[in-house]
Image 1: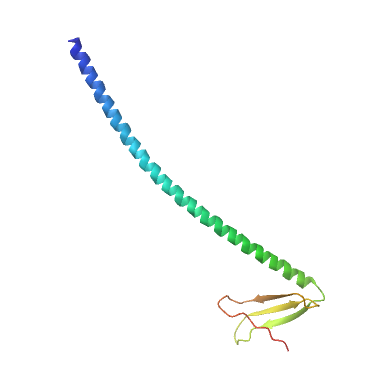
Image 2 (image 1 turned 180 degrees about the vertical axis):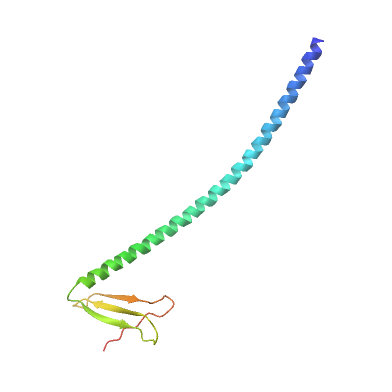
Length: 128
């Protein structure tokens, strides 16, 4: 009788062990799938961040170029001996306008233009 009880207990333990092993294997498979999904999401996020970082660097470069141009324009505007010429569009109805600042020696100059779009041709400067 004791042998039958021991055999029954052993069978129950084997069934429990097999059941737990199957559950553990299923959970491992679920975790592998979740890991693959998270890895794909992480890779996508890294790609997005890389693109955003590149765009931010390009934007920073454009901002610095603009700041340098504004500094140069401010410097030229502050020089009392510079020559300034009004720039108007040769096209009727165009609102483009600006100013050409030339150093008194003519060695450097700055053109400041307003209401000019990249799709239109730049205004021409005519003397006289």
